[in-house]
View 1 (cartoon, rainbow, N blue to C red):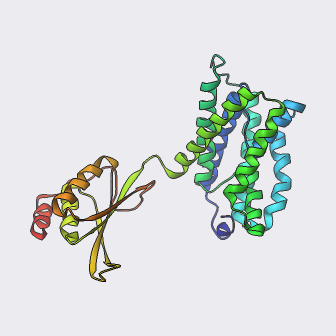
View 2: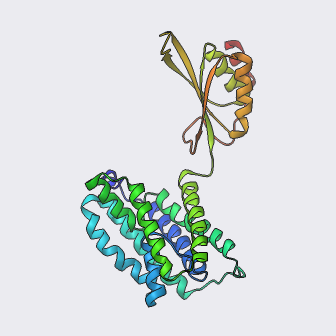
View 3: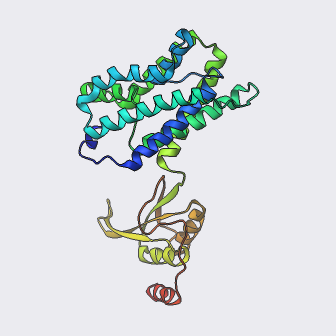
Length: 302
C-alpha cells in the first residue's frame, strides 16, 4: 500500500478529509469511549490505558507512541504515505486536545449498549473517512506493513493480533462487563469502516451466459435503461463460442432482470455478485428516459 503511493501527488482534498475524519474519531474517543470506560485496539487503546493508569493525556501520547513507529517503518513508506500518516497522526492528536478543552457531554443515562453502538458508529465513520482517502493515523498498521514486507505475515492477521492484545491488556483498568461492551463497539467500528470506505451504495453485477445474449442485452437496455457489455467466451467443455452479458443494476431491479432472462432463455446460466461501488459513465442513480427513436432502434434490433 505504502510503496505504491511513492510517486503520487499530495491532494488538498485528502488532507481536508483527514482533518474531518480525525475530528469525528477524536470526538468519539473523548465524549463516548473515555466517559463510559470503553477501550480501543491498537495504539489508541494503549493511549487510553496510559490515561487510566497514569493520567497521561491521549493527545500527547498519541504523538509520542507514533514517533518510534514512524522511524521504524519510514524506509518502506513513500513520501506521500509518510506525509499522510504524519498528517493523520497530528490531526488526531490535535483534535483530542481540542475536544478535551471543548467538552460536549452526551446524556446517555449510563446506557453502555447505546454508548458502545455510538462509539463504534462515530469512531468507524471517522477513521473510515481517513482510510477512504488513502490516509492512516499511524499505529499498528505501520508495524503490520513492515512485518508483511519482511516476514510475509498478512497485514490483517498482524493488526488483529495486536488489537486483541491491547484489548486484553485493557482489562487492567476495565471489568469484564465493560470489556464485552467494548467488543460490541469494536464490531460496529469495523462495519462502519467498511461501510465508509466502500460506499453506501451496493449494486448487483450480473454475468449472463446464454445463447440469446444479444436479445437479453437489448431487453435490459430497453426495459431497465441499464448499460450492458457483451464478452466473447468459449465453452469449457463444448469449445463452442458464445457471448456473455455483463450488466450492473440497482438491488431493486434484480428480480426484474431474473424474470427477463427467464422469459428469453430459461436455460441461461447466471451469476450475481454484490459490487460495493460503481463509477463512470453508464451507471447512475437517475436513469435518463429514452426518446421515442431510441426505443424504436432497440425494438428493431430485437
